[in-house]
Image (cartoon, rainbow over all chains, first blue to last red; front, side, top):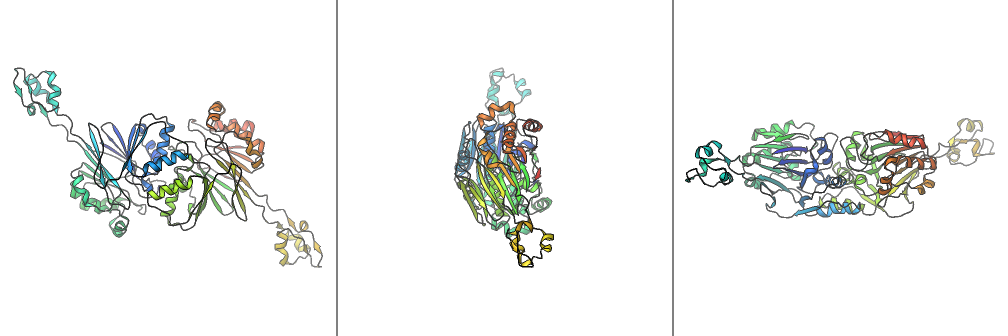
Amino acid sequence: MKLSILGCYAATPRTLTNPTAQVLEVKNHLFLLDCGEGTQVQLRKLKIRFSKINHIFISHLHGDHFFGLPGLVATFRLLGRVNPLHIYGPKGIKEAVTLLLKLGDSWTQYPLHFHELTSPSPELIFEDEKLSVTTIPLDHRIYTNGFLIAEKEGPRKLDVRAVSHHGVDRCYFQNIKDGKDVPNALGNLVPNRELSMDPPAPKRYAYCSDTAYFPEIVPQIKGVDALYHESTFLESELALATKTKHATAKQAAHIAAAAGVGQLILGHYSTRYEKIALFKEEASEVFPKTYLGDDGLSFEF
Amino acid sequence: MKLSILGCYAATPRTLTNPTAQVLEVKNHLFLLDCGEGTQVQLRKLKIRFSKINHIFISHLHGDHFFGLPGLVATFRLLGRVNPLHIYGPKGIKEAVTLLLKLGDSWTQYPLHFHELTSPSPELIFEDEKLSVTTIPLDHRIYTNGFLIAEKEGPRKLDVRAVSHHGVDRCYFQNIKDGKDVPNALGNLVPNRELSMDPPAPKRYAYCSDTAYFPEIVPQIKGVDALYHESTFLESELALATKTKHATAKQAAHIAAAAGVGQLILGHYSTRYEKIALFKEEASEVFPKTYLGDDGLSFEF
């Protein structure tokens, strides 16, 4: 999985910082997670082939998470897009985007599918043979979901030496990958474990923005390889965080520690802070494997 | 008048070019004309004190002219704006902006006034003691207005030497500025022309984007000091311009020549062109006082 952060600052776009948007490259997909104003320019800056984006997931309908969406939909139209585009987000997102297209008499020539979300519980919203996307209901001022993107376990890996040693015919190779026991040259069944190795562990990424400190999500994100968790504030603004249903860096770290994640990536910094280094300092005290997200950065896991 | 061009490229925001938006500074006002995506970042880049913007004029509801508006309205809210904001634009603009605010449960704490336009004829939409703003109905694929911003004639200027020579009492100075004849030291009426000079000629600016070649506007913009006229295409794409109801640089120049304007500023260049110098070349053949608008440029007239 490769995560590219297009923007990870709260509230207002500024000269050098962008509101929330990120792209997750996984199993031949480019998933766009949130789409603040300026997202399409950031996609160009980072040279992401954005015509390959077929699925957009919007966490909630605050402007800094979706005001870039109508423009992106319109640009896809101008670029002559043909492929269907799927947009997942809270109820109301369809009305908003289609009203703007209607007012401009600018209907897309490509199929535009909206998948509106209303459930307060985790919901499987996308699935193919290689991965799934599930909502992570969060605790914010309006209806908000994070997203859990989970690879599925791949086929078992052929142990080429063992297969050769047992003289297994190549017509059985797919069966071995599928975990089945197969006959050797003499016709005797060989246990699959002797002919194959475990596939690489499937990766999981959890995207959680925006939310108050909300330990209810811990069971769902247990052991993910990477967790992006919002940290709008430092601990000195804890009261403000609580009031506005945002989290502090330390709270994000407590979630990461409780869930035992591989790494924590911080973001959604309030624009009140001139430097973001303190976010890492505060979080690292609780959870050492903390990284600072920043616009233009990418992470592989 | 000082015109700052925030963006003057058509269709899609890109790394180095912005969709349409400009600010006209005139008689203590900052008027924002159109508001494509990224406008608030451009306002910051050009260090325009955008809390001073109280009037926003939107020509039409294509995304590249107003998708930056919801974000700007939201940012004004976050910055704690108190002053009323007036938005003028085609019918539908109120529904669009308010729907987005409603979905985010982000109502403004400052008064937001919409002035929806539907008239096919020029309409006086703003006026104070120093200037007026009138729509310039244009010919585009959807309902579109340009805007004519016209200063009013100021008071006459006191001819200090003449006033002293005639021994006019200072209590009459305002009357002289108002154009009245006033008595001299002997009580004899002196004609106003002998005591005052003409005020500076009031300036006028015409903003015309987007539109096909549309000579019907010429009488309304006759003799303006500056005309911004869209030139989406070069003459080689005339057929495309006609089909999409845009203008070529040469057509813009023909309008400028027919209206006898002080200067022509081009813009709304299609992003298909790598360099815009040809726009000036083509237009200058017809109307020499042609300037290339570009993002970040400003013009004083």
